[in-house]
Length: 324
Image (cartoon, rainbow, N blue to C red; front, side, top):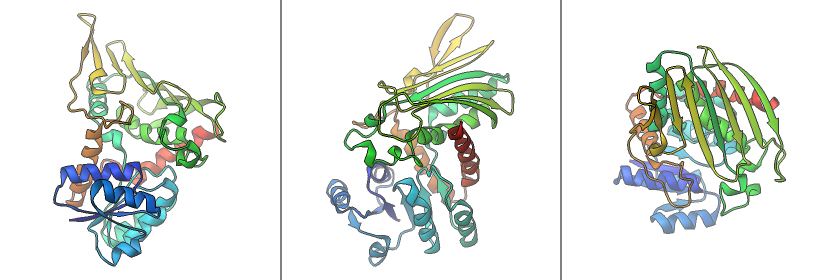
Protein backbone atom coordinates (compact mmCIF):
# COMPACT_ATOMS: atom_id res chain seq x y z
CA UNK A 1 0.00 0.00 0.00
CA UNK A 2 1.18 3.52 -0.83
CA UNK A 3 -0.02 6.47 1.25
CA UNK A 4 0.53 10.16 0.69
CA UNK A 5 0.88 12.30 3.82
CA UNK A 6 -0.01 15.83 2.75
CA UNK A 7 1.35 18.27 5.31
CA UNK A 8 4.52 17.44 7.24
CA UNK A 9 3.96 19.45 10.40
CA UNK A 10 3.56 17.84 13.82
CA UNK A 11 0.35 15.99 12.98
CA UNK A 12 1.63 14.72 9.64
CA UNK A 13 4.73 13.40 11.36
CA UNK A 14 2.60 11.69 14.01
CA UNK A 15 0.59 9.93 11.31
CA UNK A 16 3.78 8.82 9.54
CA UNK A 17 5.27 7.45 12.75
CA UNK A 18 2.11 5.55 13.75
CA UNK A 19 1.32 4.16 10.28
CA UNK A 20 4.88 2.91 9.97
CA UNK A 21 4.59 1.27 13.40
CA UNK A 22 1.19 -0.29 12.66
CA UNK A 23 1.71 -1.22 8.98
CA UNK A 24 5.47 -1.72 8.46
CA UNK A 25 5.23 -2.62 4.76
CA UNK A 26 3.47 0.60 3.79
CA UNK A 27 5.18 3.01 1.37
CA UNK A 28 4.84 6.53 2.79
CA UNK A 29 5.27 9.62 0.62
CA UNK A 30 5.47 13.10 2.15
CA UNK A 31 4.08 16.21 0.47
CA UNK A 32 4.65 19.74 1.76
CA UNK A 33 5.16 23.16 0.20
CA UNK A 34 7.89 24.00 2.73
CA UNK A 35 11.30 22.63 1.82
CA UNK A 36 12.42 22.72 5.47
CA UNK A 37 9.56 20.40 6.53
CA UNK A 38 10.28 18.10 3.57
CA UNK A 39 13.93 17.81 4.52
CA UNK A 40 13.11 17.26 8.18
CA UNK A 41 10.61 14.45 7.40
CA UNK A 42 13.01 12.82 4.92
CA UNK A 43 15.80 12.92 7.49
CA UNK A 44 13.65 11.72 10.39
CA UNK A 45 11.73 8.94 8.62
CA UNK A 46 13.78 8.19 5.51
CA UNK A 47 10.79 8.82 3.23
CA UNK A 48 10.64 10.43 -0.20
CA UNK A 49 9.12 13.91 -0.13
CA UNK A 50 7.68 16.22 -2.80
CA UNK A 51 6.64 19.84 -3.14
CA UNK A 52 3.14 19.13 -4.46
CA UNK A 53 0.59 16.44 -5.29
CA UNK A 54 1.41 16.87 -8.96
CA UNK A 55 5.11 16.28 -8.38
CA UNK A 56 4.42 13.20 -6.26
CA UNK A 57 2.00 11.81 -8.87
CA UNK A 58 4.80 11.66 -11.43
CA UNK A 59 6.46 8.97 -9.33
CA UNK A 60 3.84 7.36 -7.08
CA UNK A 61 0.12 6.61 -7.22
CA UNK A 62 -1.38 6.38 -3.72
CA UNK A 63 -4.06 4.05 -2.46
CA UNK A 64 -5.16 6.78 -0.07
CA UNK A 65 -4.09 10.17 1.24
CA UNK A 66 -3.92 11.71 4.70
CA UNK A 67 -4.65 15.45 4.67
CA UNK A 68 -2.68 16.89 7.60
CA UNK A 69 -2.28 20.54 6.62
CA UNK A 70 -3.84 23.61 8.28
CA UNK A 71 -7.66 23.36 8.31
CA UNK A 72 -8.45 26.09 5.78
CA UNK A 73 -6.53 24.22 3.07
CA UNK A 74 -8.36 20.93 3.61
CA UNK A 75 -11.38 21.43 1.35
CA UNK A 76 -9.32 21.97 -1.80
CA UNK A 77 -6.90 19.12 -1.05
CA UNK A 78 -9.76 16.74 -0.29
CA UNK A 79 -11.51 17.69 -3.53
CA UNK A 80 -8.39 17.25 -5.64
CA UNK A 81 -7.68 13.88 -4.05
CA UNK A 82 -11.20 12.61 -4.60
CA UNK A 83 -11.18 13.82 -8.21
CA UNK A 84 -8.06 11.73 -8.82
CA UNK A 85 -9.74 8.66 -7.29
CA UNK A 86 -7.98 8.51 -3.92
CA UNK A 87 -9.56 7.58 -0.59
CA UNK A 88 -9.13 10.40 1.94
CA UNK A 89 -8.43 10.64 5.66
CA UNK A 90 -8.69 14.26 6.76
CA UNK A 91 -7.68 15.82 10.05
CA UNK A 92 -10.15 18.04 11.89
CA UNK A 93 -11.45 20.82 9.63
CA UNK A 94 -12.89 23.50 11.99
CA UNK A 95 -14.91 24.93 9.08
CA UNK A 96 -17.48 23.29 6.81
CA UNK A 97 -15.95 24.60 3.58
CA UNK A 98 -16.65 22.20 0.71
CA UNK A 99 -18.44 19.63 2.88
CA UNK A 100 -21.50 19.11 0.69
CA UNK A 101 -19.52 19.14 -2.56
CA UNK A 102 -16.85 16.75 -1.30
CA UNK A 103 -19.36 14.36 0.28
CA UNK A 104 -21.25 14.25 -3.02
CA UNK A 105 -18.02 13.68 -4.98
CA UNK A 106 -16.92 10.84 -2.67
CA UNK A 107 -20.32 9.17 -3.06
CA UNK A 108 -20.26 9.61 -6.84
CA UNK A 109 -16.83 7.99 -7.13
CA UNK A 110 -17.42 5.31 -4.52
CA UNK A 111 -14.56 6.59 -2.34
CA UNK A 112 -14.10 6.82 1.42
CA UNK A 113 -13.97 10.29 2.96
CA UNK A 114 -13.00 9.75 6.59
CA UNK A 115 -13.02 12.62 9.09
CA UNK A 116 -10.80 12.53 12.17
CA UNK A 117 -12.42 12.85 15.60
CA UNK A 118 -9.76 11.26 17.79
CA UNK A 119 -11.47 11.34 21.23
CA UNK A 120 -14.25 9.07 19.93
CA UNK A 121 -11.57 6.37 19.61
CA UNK A 122 -10.09 6.99 23.04
CA UNK A 123 -10.67 4.35 25.71
CA UNK A 124 -11.54 6.79 28.49
CA UNK A 125 -14.25 8.46 26.42
CA UNK A 126 -15.67 5.08 25.43
CA UNK A 127 -15.78 4.01 29.08
CA UNK A 128 -17.48 7.25 30.18
CA UNK A 129 -20.06 6.85 27.41
CA UNK A 130 -20.75 3.25 28.46
CA UNK A 131 -21.01 4.11 32.16
CA UNK A 132 -23.50 6.92 31.53
CA UNK A 133 -25.59 4.68 29.27
CA UNK A 134 -25.52 1.81 31.78
CA UNK A 135 -26.70 4.07 34.60
CA UNK A 136 -29.80 4.92 32.60
CA UNK A 137 -30.62 8.13 34.49
CA UNK A 138 -30.11 11.78 33.68
CA UNK A 139 -26.71 13.16 34.61
CA UNK A 140 -25.03 16.50 35.03
CA UNK A 141 -21.38 17.22 34.24
CA UNK A 142 -18.71 19.87 34.57
CA UNK A 143 -15.88 19.71 32.03
CA UNK A 144 -12.90 22.05 31.79
CA UNK A 145 -10.38 21.89 28.96
CA UNK A 146 -7.76 24.60 28.74
CA UNK A 147 -4.13 25.44 28.07
CA UNK A 148 -2.28 28.71 27.57
CA UNK A 149 -2.09 29.26 23.81
CA UNK A 150 1.70 29.90 23.52
CA UNK A 151 2.29 26.56 25.24
CA UNK A 152 0.43 24.56 22.57
CA UNK A 153 3.39 24.53 20.18
CA UNK A 154 6.25 26.10 22.16
CA UNK A 155 8.63 25.57 19.22
CA UNK A 156 6.76 28.22 17.15
CA UNK A 157 4.92 31.49 17.77
CA UNK A 158 1.15 31.12 18.08
CA UNK A 159 0.77 33.84 15.43
CA UNK A 160 2.18 31.40 12.85
CA UNK A 161 -0.04 28.54 14.05
CA UNK A 162 -3.62 28.25 12.75
CA UNK A 163 -5.07 28.34 16.30
CA UNK A 164 -3.91 31.96 16.52
CA UNK A 165 -6.27 32.94 13.70
CA UNK A 166 -9.87 33.93 14.33
CA UNK A 167 -11.45 31.52 11.83
CA UNK A 168 -9.54 28.49 13.18
CA UNK A 169 -8.86 29.71 16.70
CA UNK A 170 -7.73 27.66 19.69
CA UNK A 171 -11.06 27.71 21.54
CA UNK A 172 -12.82 26.65 18.35
CA UNK A 173 -10.43 23.74 17.95
CA UNK A 174 -11.04 22.53 21.51
CA UNK A 175 -14.81 22.73 20.96
CA UNK A 176 -14.53 20.84 17.67
CA UNK A 177 -12.37 18.14 19.25
CA UNK A 178 -14.45 17.61 22.38
CA UNK A 179 -18.09 18.14 21.39
CA UNK A 180 -18.38 15.06 19.11
CA UNK A 181 -17.54 12.57 21.87
CA UNK A 182 -19.56 14.58 24.41
CA UNK A 183 -22.63 14.26 22.20
CA UNK A 184 -22.10 10.51 22.01
CA UNK A 185 -21.75 10.31 25.80
CA UNK A 186 -24.44 12.75 26.92
CA UNK A 187 -26.79 13.08 23.93
CA UNK A 188 -27.42 15.47 21.07
CA UNK A 189 -27.42 19.16 21.94
CA UNK A 190 -30.81 20.80 22.36
CA UNK A 191 -29.83 24.26 23.57
CA UNK A 192 -26.85 26.28 24.79
CA UNK A 193 -26.19 29.39 26.86
CA UNK A 194 -22.80 31.08 26.56
CA UNK A 195 -20.63 33.43 28.61
CA UNK A 196 -17.34 34.47 26.98
CA UNK A 197 -14.39 36.59 28.06
CA UNK A 198 -11.04 38.13 27.15
CA UNK A 199 -8.70 37.35 30.05
CA UNK A 200 -5.21 37.48 28.50
CA UNK A 201 -3.00 40.05 26.82
CA UNK A 202 -2.40 37.72 23.88
CA UNK A 203 -2.46 39.29 20.43
CA UNK A 204 -5.60 37.46 19.28
CA UNK A 205 -8.90 38.78 17.94
CA UNK A 206 -11.19 36.18 19.52
CA UNK A 207 -12.45 35.33 23.00
CA UNK A 208 -9.96 33.31 25.02
CA UNK A 209 -12.53 31.67 27.30
CA UNK A 210 -16.04 30.29 26.89
CA UNK A 211 -18.32 28.96 29.62
CA UNK A 212 -21.01 26.98 27.83
CA UNK A 213 -24.16 25.67 29.51
CA UNK A 214 -25.44 22.73 27.47
CA UNK A 215 -28.88 21.11 27.53
CA UNK A 216 -29.08 17.74 25.79
CA UNK A 217 -32.17 16.32 24.13
CA UNK A 218 -32.34 13.41 26.61
CA UNK A 219 -32.41 15.67 29.67
CA UNK A 220 -28.71 15.61 30.55
CA UNK A 221 -27.18 19.01 31.34
CA UNK A 222 -23.62 20.23 31.70
CA UNK A 223 -21.14 23.07 31.90
CA UNK A 224 -18.26 23.04 29.42
CA UNK A 225 -15.42 25.50 30.07
CA UNK A 226 -13.00 26.05 27.19
CA UNK A 227 -10.01 28.37 27.29
CA UNK A 228 -6.56 29.21 25.95
CA UNK A 229 -5.72 30.95 29.23
CA UNK A 230 -4.90 28.29 31.83
CA UNK A 231 -1.16 28.13 32.52
CA UNK A 232 -1.48 24.54 33.70
CA UNK A 233 -2.78 22.35 30.90
CA UNK A 234 -6.04 21.01 32.27
CA UNK A 235 -8.63 18.44 31.24
CA UNK A 236 -10.95 17.72 34.15
CA UNK A 237 -14.40 16.12 34.03
CA UNK A 238 -16.98 15.34 36.70
CA UNK A 239 -20.16 13.42 35.86
CA UNK A 240 -22.78 12.86 38.52
CA UNK A 241 -26.31 12.11 39.62
CA UNK A 242 -27.66 10.69 42.86
CA UNK A 243 -26.33 7.19 42.07
CA UNK A 244 -23.27 7.93 39.95
CA UNK A 245 -20.06 9.91 40.31
CA UNK A 246 -17.24 9.76 37.73
CA UNK A 247 -14.13 11.89 37.63
CA UNK A 248 -11.39 12.11 35.03
CA UNK A 249 -8.26 14.27 34.80
CA UNK A 250 -7.17 13.57 31.25
CA UNK A 251 -5.13 10.35 31.49
CA UNK A 252 -6.15 6.68 31.70
CA UNK A 253 -4.87 6.40 35.28
CA UNK A 254 -7.14 9.24 36.45
CA UNK A 255 -10.50 7.82 35.34
CA UNK A 256 -12.30 6.90 38.55
CA UNK A 257 -15.77 6.02 39.76
CA UNK A 258 -17.21 6.31 43.25
CA UNK A 259 -18.14 3.07 44.98
CA UNK A 260 -21.15 4.50 46.80
CA UNK A 261 -21.42 1.64 49.29
CA UNK A 262 -17.79 1.97 50.42
CA UNK A 263 -17.51 5.74 49.85
CA UNK A 264 -14.28 5.13 47.96
CA UNK A 265 -13.03 6.22 44.54
CA UNK A 266 -11.95 3.29 42.37
CA UNK A 267 -9.82 3.46 39.24
CA UNK A 268 -11.51 2.26 36.06
CA UNK A 269 -9.05 0.26 33.91
CA UNK A 270 -9.14 1.57 30.35
CA UNK A 271 -6.24 0.08 28.42
CA UNK A 272 -2.89 1.27 27.13
CA UNK A 273 -1.28 4.67 27.39
CA UNK A 274 1.72 6.17 25.59
CA UNK A 275 2.68 9.83 25.49
CA UNK A 276 5.33 11.18 23.12
CA UNK A 277 7.94 13.57 24.58
CA UNK A 278 7.07 17.22 24.00
CA UNK A 279 3.29 16.73 24.11
CA UNK A 280 0.85 17.28 26.96
CA UNK A 281 0.35 14.26 29.21
CA UNK A 282 -3.27 14.24 28.01
CA UNK A 283 -2.23 13.11 24.51
CA UNK A 284 -2.53 9.32 24.27
CA UNK A 285 -0.97 7.93 21.10
CA UNK A 286 -3.17 4.82 21.25
CA UNK A 287 -6.26 6.90 20.44
CA UNK A 288 -4.61 8.01 17.19
CA UNK A 289 -3.72 4.40 16.45
CA UNK A 290 -7.33 3.30 17.02
CA UNK A 291 -8.50 6.00 14.65
CA UNK A 292 -6.05 5.05 11.90
CA UNK A 293 -7.13 1.43 12.25
CA UNK A 294 -10.78 2.51 11.98
CA UNK A 295 -10.00 4.33 8.72
CA UNK A 296 -8.54 1.22 7.12
CA UNK A 297 -11.49 -0.81 8.40
CA UNK A 298 -13.77 1.71 6.68
CA UNK A 299 -11.95 1.02 3.41
CA UNK A 300 -12.99 -2.61 3.92
CA UNK A 301 -16.66 -1.66 4.36
CA UNK A 302 -17.00 -0.78 8.04
CA UNK A 303 -19.30 2.11 8.95
CA UNK A 304 -17.47 5.24 10.18
CA UNK A 305 -18.25 6.44 13.70
CA UNK A 306 -18.17 10.11 12.71
CA UNK A 307 -18.90 11.80 9.38
CA UNK A 308 -18.99 15.24 7.82
CA UNK A 309 -22.78 15.19 8.23
CA UNK A 310 -22.22 14.84 11.98
CA UNK A 311 -19.51 17.48 11.91
CA UNK A 312 -21.71 20.01 10.12
CA UNK A 313 -24.07 19.93 13.10
CA UNK A 314 -21.21 20.34 15.58
CA UNK A 315 -19.71 23.23 13.63
CA UNK A 316 -23.11 24.95 13.52
CA UNK A 317 -23.28 24.78 17.34
CA UNK A 318 -19.72 26.12 17.56
CA UNK A 319 -20.67 29.06 15.31
CA UNK A 320 -23.51 29.82 17.70
CA UNK A 321 -21.21 29.53 20.74
CA UNK A 322 -18.78 32.02 19.21
CA UNK A 323 -21.62 34.47 18.58
CA UNK A 324 -22.46 34.27 22.31
